Image 1 (cartoon, rainbow, N blue to C red):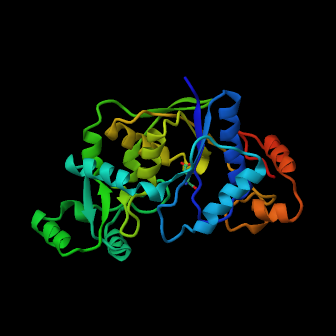
Image 2: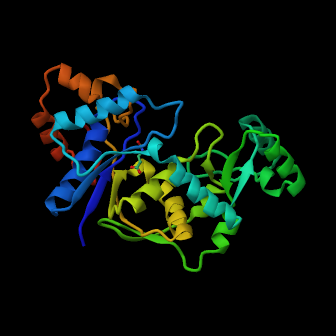
Image 3: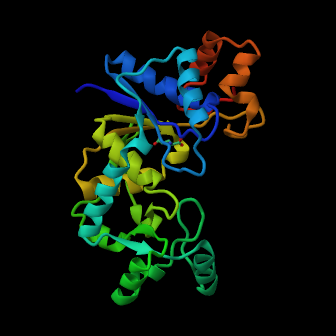
Length: 289
Ligand code: GLU
């Protein structure tokens, strides 16, 4: 089977060494196997993404010596496809509109004795809008009330026949527990589709066979696996790599100017030096760079 890998950054800042590590790992996996390496810009969040960062990503990857196959997929150009997925889930009664503000949710959670928490430590949505009377829901929708779309987790899980799992490189079969996410948001009030929906749709649509990404996204794979099962999408293998850290042991982030490829380039660091440094940092351990 042909190996298809991808690098899927969000243009919310300049690429840093951690991104370069992820991109190089996926690129090498594809090139070593005579497969394809794809580039996708995950720019569905209009509040955080900037065209200038998108352009900088292409430039920095090219400078680093990476090439990709086919055209760059830009998520904001595919909104009707995500809408179609949401419509299919809605037709099956698996999503519902949620009109709650953050404040509403915080109040509701504060009032309940033991609110369960999701993988990121935040309280799970208490389900307020899941049980709205039909007439109230219809009235709010027809009044144009802003709303998100949430997955009805219990209903979604009830449609799944077999326990969910995925294959992790070097580890084997990993069991999934998507219920930990509760009624996850699949479309936000201010963004037409969520990261979870778009990333899973696009990996399937683009025929990605190996998803290489940082271990910070590993918990999300449980939810992605559920979406794949609901939509009948092919399931890729996964390779979650350890995150690079700075000398103080902190994980690199877009706000760390020092580690951006731009800054390093301005300081005279060469692509060959970065590539050599990142080969030494290779997975599975998070080595300081
Ligand atoms: N767009 C995501 C990010 O920049 C990565 C998505 C993925 O690799 O699954 O964090």
